[in-house]
Structure formats: structure tokens, C-alpha cells
Length: 65
Image (tube, rainbow, N blue to C red; front, top):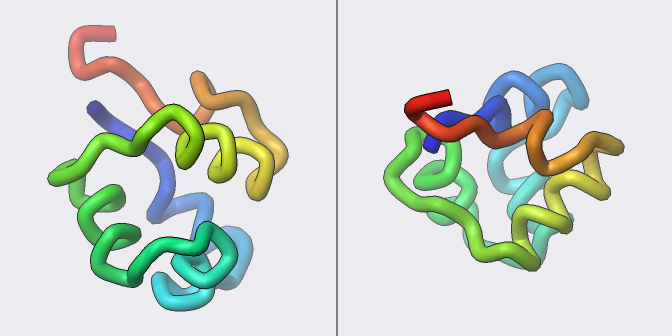
């Protein structure tokens, strides 16, 4: 699944560690999300959406879509 987490994180001036702290996950999880090695749980996707003030669909896109 494609996502815009890296771009959004940079736009908000956050490091991976800072974003991880805000999401209550590890920095390694943030890295795995950004590189597409891990798809988030639905609760984590909602946390990301709330944090960035976006809809989940604005952050994540299906590879085929």
C-alpha cells in the first residue's frame, strides 16, 4: 500500500522518533510504514489521519488505485 507518511512528516517538521512518540509506536514502526514494509492497523491509520488532519484515504492509496 502506498502512503504519504514521509512527506507529511517532513511537512510537519517531525523526525521519525517524534512521530513515533505521538503515535505511541516505535521509530522502527514509523520507518516500516514509510518504506511500505508494514501496513498499519485501522486504529493506527486513524491516529495518523487525526494527527495530520486528513482522511485515511488522503494518506494511504491502494497500489492498484
